[in-house]
Length: 374
Image (tube, rainbow, N blue to C red; front, side):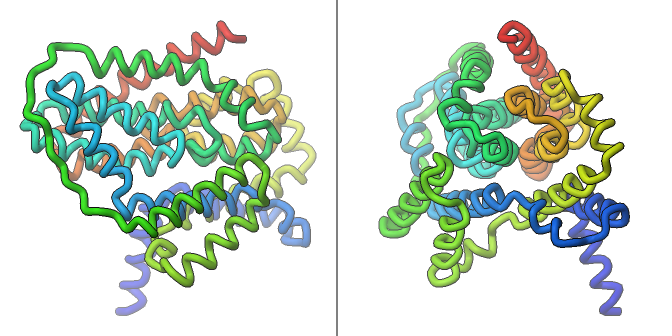
């Protein structure tokens, strides 16, 4: 009986972490072709893994302290109409995703936005708002290396400078901001009572510690501090002072990266396979990043494609734009969908339709911009 319960638990866990299961399965299958040896250790990009760990720890701590909710509440106290309210709620995840990753921005601001609309008696705006918030988080996160996991990996792998990375993505993010402003600000602005959200006072000492932790992560991103050292300091602090945050880190994402690293490393040691993929990919990195992201999402796409091409700029643009389109193009988009489906199950069909139309339209627009920029 206990065995059956354990099996059911494993099945439920696997359904919740499909990408992780796929990464581990690919790593295991590839091990039949390239038996484990000392080179396996070199497959793992430890800078990416350790930096991702540190960033997740800091952002989870800030989230648990209510830091983002407090700022959002402060901004909303100044709104008097639905148009202002929508603009604030959409641009919160757009801006914050540049610093705390798109998934954390959505986990924070989608429930926050739903609460605001409920208090303002604007339930009819739930679907438009959450669709735009999801779009905003995926678009804003394109700007910086720490905006999303694939950016952090490609930035580390490419050796690009922080400024060069941001400059590369700036035109796409600027165009996105303009489009989001037009979409969120359209229609009449109906008066609403100022929404008063009172977040509990955060522990100032804990906030200061998080600030120091985030500064260390930035120094690591700027390549002024070794990422493994920052991760070690972060881990020691969490073990001693904040084990709750340590338990809440997304280890499945770290495991996904490790699984794909092993798969890519093994397949790269098979000459005919490496040459085949490289020949197909050469000169088509951007569109390959977009198309593959629609099927397997942009994080696995970035990990896989980077093993066979060093055209970093095209891969970065392609995998970022690839986060638009289908619901699974960016795994962060599933966060919003699940939240809407849970709170407003009758909105699922309308949400999916609007999400798809907006995403395809934005993807087409940014692909046109990429063609113009060359």
